[in-house]
Amino acid sequence: MSQRTLGILGLGESIVALDACHLLEVVKPDTPLVPRPLAPAWSLGTFRLRNSLVPCVDLGGLLQLGPSGAAESVEKHIAIVNYRGGRFGLLIDRAYDMITVEQSQMSALGKEAGAASELTPWLVTHPVSGQPIYLLDIDVLFSLEGMVLAFEDVDQTSSSSTALENDAQQHGRRSHRYLLVDIEEATLAIDTAVVSEITACGAIERPVVTVEAYLGNVALRDMRIPIFDPGMLIGYPPLTSSPSHVVVLNTDSGRIGLAVTHINTIGAFDDSDLHPLPGADQAADHVIGVLSRPEQDDALCLDHRQLFTGEALGALAQIHARLGDEVSDRRNQQEWQRFAFVHFESGGRYVELLEQLDAVLPLPENLLPLKEDGPFSAAMRHREQTVSLVDLRILLGKNADAPAEHVLVADSGQGLVGFMVDQVTRIEYMDAPVNSFILRWRGDVNPDAPPIEQAKRMIAVGEGAKQQIHSVLCLQTLARLLVQTDKEISPTASA
Image (cartoon, rainbow, N blue to C red; front, side, top):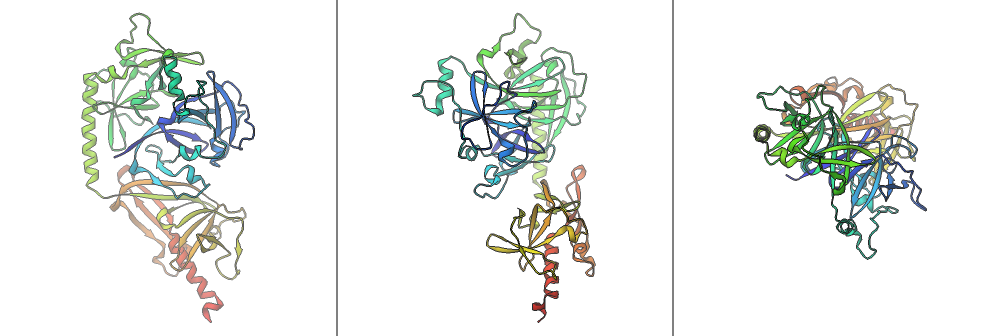
């Protein structure tokens, strides 16, 4: 299957990702942003990074995700993005993760010109937290009017797509990207070319064999990853505290993990930034030198090629790769499905299956008022169809004084019904066996109950510790019942 490695960017409560090949580094600029003349509102200006000028975009503002950190914030971060030989910056709150996903794990969002879904056309579920991740389309982003790139100051006759490469050749240097992580005794630099993903460190299973620096295994989706103490591998004392993250590396034999106490940053470094270790340092063969730049602490650069040649390390990676294949084979014997749940607020927190809905829309400003003797209070247009609107908060007996923000559209079989709610908070995706979906209770067993009670369900989905139980509102059922009620009380229907 086709895999994509993604760099994760935090914007308030939301998560956005881009292909890791575009992410050069994440920095805290030490020079102010200078506004650019006649620039769009989401263009924050330009700042200087190591003698280069970088234009910066307010990603949170562009995607309407609220403030991603004002320009004056001392905690702002800027993700430096490489695109077509040039670079630009994205203002973000944090960059804390890297994951690898299969193409089959990505869900397409409907595209609409000028909408956020055009900039973020794919949705992925974070494998650890379960949060939805919106995948940023760099090509669409750069097609926006007012987007600019900065190129290295080289010969003007050089084409923009090769400017950085030509500049590197002229100066006899090459650029590499490294992930900087902390252990208790030092900061380590790992070539991002071998980093598969970064994940929070869960419970570590005790090792079944005694191997130097081998801490045990952690569960990562359908795999068991052998975890090593990188400090011990380079001659430092063992960790005395629990690691916060695991950096998963791809080896020829399989995947291994390095336990670290803190994810520092991703940075782009030139050959001139790598300095050989003086003398015969105790860090042995697994370190090729020290990465050093004036604006950050020194980092020991791991030699992953030497690291991967260790017989015990390679053997453990190979064993766990085989075990992962066996688990995958057992999983493939069952029919699996991706279940999607829409979490929303309507005077309280509720859940609905995404497949029950025709659309999730922002409530438009202009609505057509309807008669007051039926359940529907207004109407709107959606894709050349009329949608009859009802305030779900009123049906639930909740306070409806605040204006609704979203509409959940369901097909009643006799027309579209839109349920006005406070807001949609998130869409959660879950992979589980088809036969694990169980309807535990349904409100329509009592046909005399009010429509809102008949629409209530209790479901369970998933297996073992991953099983989830949800109390959901079946809005398709509720839409059908409301349309029937409206026809029964309508004078024209009874005539």
